[in-house]
Amino acid sequence: MNFLKLIRKNCLFDDFSDKEINTLFDCMKGRIVMKSKGMLIAKEDSKAEEICIVLEGTLLKFITKLNGEKEPVGMLSQGEMFGMEQFYLEDKRIGFNVVAASEVSLLYLQTNSIVTMCEKACPCHQKLIHKALQYLSRRIEDLQNNNNYITIKGMRLKIAQLIYDKYLEQNSLQLSLGMDRNEMAAFLNVSRPSMSREMMRMRDEGIMEFWKDKITIKNIQKLTAIVKRR
Amino acid sequence: MNFLKLIRKNCLFDDFSDKEINTLFDCMKGRIVMKSKGMLIAKEDSKAEEICIVLEGTLLKFITKLNGEKEPVGMLSQGEMFGMEQFYLEDKRIGFNVVAASEVSLLYLQTNSIVTMCEKACPCHQKLIHKALQYLSRRIEDLQNNNNYITIKGMRLKIAQLIYDKYLEQNSLQLSLGMDRNEMAAFLNVSRPSMSREMMRMRDEGIMEFWKDKITIKNIQKLTAIVKRR
DNA sequence: TTAATTCTGTAGCCTATGCTACTATTTTTC
DNA sequence: GAAAAATAGTAGCATAGGCTACAGAATTAA
Image 1 (cartoon, rainbow over the protein chains, first blue to last red):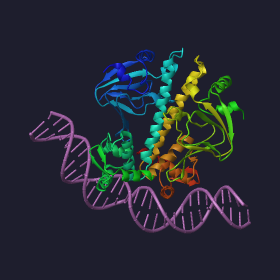
Image 2 (image 1 turned 45 degrees about the vertical axis):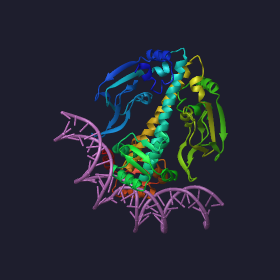
Image 3 (image 1 turned 60 degrees about the vertical axis):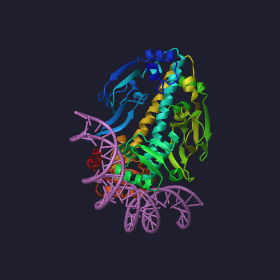
Image 4 (image 1 turned 90 degrees about the horizontal axis):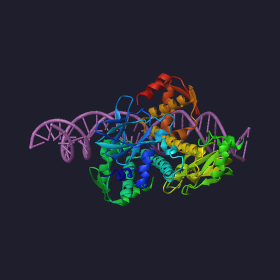
């Protein structure tokens, strides 16, 4: 797949013309880097001076806990990026490690030039700034929503809400969670066996069926009933 | 207190000159509005077209739950604002109600003009954009930190971490929480009696003393010991 | 000052959930 | 295709913490 198609997977660049992208690429001192699986992309206390956009492959974010254990805190797939929100902070500290989960190609762009580039205030300049503000705003919204799952009281409610949201998102009674049980438990901030136990109960009550990360909602009324009264 | 001093309490404007502020005020179609205690400032499903900065007084944010109950979700004091992060979202929906908790004076500014104003790319334009990006980034950081408390397992750990953070922040063994027990419990996402119970235990063990929202750390070693091994 | 209301601490009960195994199944590796 | 490593379900026990209810302080209102 060609470079222009790839870069448009990223939300900052999704509606720029070929010409504009080339201009921006120069403006922002773009450079493309390939890394192989397992390589360290960024250390958690390094400073963000560039945005890093995933063109191909997957990155893994993790932090090192005080006891030395590594805790995964998310992943970045095609089109996603990191380094933007840190750049504008006092210390620019990234706060997590990034490692390649597969063969990856990455695009680095100077974050700095988002604000300072092209003194003539070219039209793509404005659009890019708007996109940047949009991106950060969405991150805020996401975080506020993520809080939601963690804040929700009750195992059944957490599970139901997650499935219900995926149902709305994928608009189908057959949905894919996109994570395994461990990840799901971590995401909901509960223990895996307890979660499993409750999922089995819900299956027994005919609310849903599941196999690995595929869920089939069998009784949408019951599911909505659980979700609605929170 | 004069207008210029007041507007500089807001993080977007904290290092602009008088002249620049006046320019921006015109550019962004600034208008100042007074409201009295109890008045509704914004409804939760209205659209953000302007930023609203608190010049004087305090605003209260709350959401209406499905059962009709009002749940407070934060407050805005002098210099703080709302409406910015929502403006760049698809639907611009604010998502919470805002009501005046006291006599207030508010400054409204057209969010739109942050990106589009002064085609000549005047210097204050760039600075303002940078400030906006900074503000949003800080919000992200804040949210990520708030998650922390909620994610922490164990009553004692939650309490200890909160107090420890306040200790670092206020740099004194005698500190002020700035919230009552109910707010604190809500903030840590636990029940008030359970929290109280644990606080009493910690007092009995000589870790701390407290009276209302004032805490005195009696044994900082013990406190750090709790916090350090998470 | 008294009354009303809002905070805080206390007690006791009970359930939801964490945790530790262990097993069965599936996927990966070589 | 056998062995190894993930992944998922099950069971049982221990307990942290939720909830209700009440009492005493302290603050606010009248």
